[in-house]
Length: 573
Image (tube, rainbow, N blue to C red):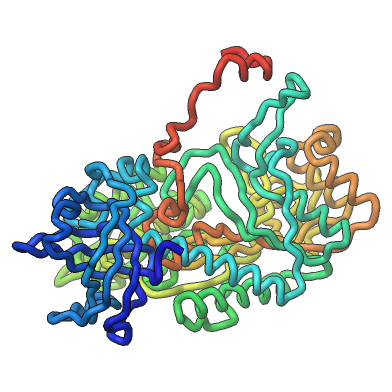
């Protein structure tokens, strides 16, 4: 080894010991005939003391140069309690500059000097030198090890599934890879190992997991990347509760061992309908209590036609209440949220010494009396149930952000998702999760082309999502394994038998040779780490992420391919 110790392990017990440290020049301070250099590695920082015999070296030294320093450990006259090595310093007798650093493109360790994310990503190898980034990588590694140990103890087998596979619809665009050997044909990178994990159940693996790489060509945002990591799980001969129990065990172990937090089990559960109706989200943040209330009865015969008309058409009037005071400009910001969801505006009622608001003058005394029972402000929307609760759910989150309420820890399951959703874009039904999700027991007979769209939309599924702090961390379901039921599912979705076999043939074919009942779940590993660490973006949980625009700035990718490569693939430039 080129060093005897790391830069984070020496203390007063090592006084007088001859040591060799290696690392980066974190800071350089020269006072008269002495220089003080903080040398840093992944483990910590140690102060070096150099006299003017080494002046020729330290006078030309640049920050972040790589050094090897030898000398004796001495006690510091003025100790530094902020660092683990603050009791000691190294009196250097030899200093070697292993690699001299150029001037830095940005300030790595000075948070007061701002640098853009693009600059940091372009020089990610420098950004990763920061202590918080190194700790993140260690945290991620420990989380992976805990996950592997947990599933190993539960008799799971980790199986790697292919990266090059057949394109299958998973809800996003595939990344396509042209084949050189099979001209005009293409591979797809997997959006998830969904079919493979189910094939492993047919194969008799019984308990599978994988820390799997997945790829989706979709627009990026703070919790989304082209390539991401899943904790992928599948089990045979299980029901929903088995998957729930297994998952709760893993999450509690991760929080306990990584953060020292004891998570209460079992986790809370809400049906999809209850979550939407009360919180306006299928991933509700329950760390704060601002529920949505139904005010339809209150406005039914209120004389306010704008509300009455919506109720007469089968709609609802829902609202939320807070004691917080809001300025007119703040209310206008909330109105913009309602407008983005297709509403002409946001109704509101202030209840203070008197009732005020856009329609206060038209309110009856009895209606004013109802609103006077609590002092604060009510925000109201009227219309079809789903658009109303969805818009109010987003307003609820905005209120919580403004009031600083999104703190603490909330973990819950959202269950009984609808099996189908309606797409206005193509005027067709789509599977909420995927077409292999089983309907809730007792509803199988309703899965038919003869059933109305309205009734099909009411069929609940055996699907479940794990939600932490208002973020969907994972989701899964009990799968369809009955051949006739699967065919009915495809028919309802408008997928012909020929198309189904073209897209899912390997899975459907395997089901003809004995398939066990099975189900599973997949967690967004990067997203889980983001929530656990309280980070703003999953980019900060990944060593080499893509930028907001989807580019790999450090590598300069994507880039053009050379003509030889394009010729071999028979692709025109």
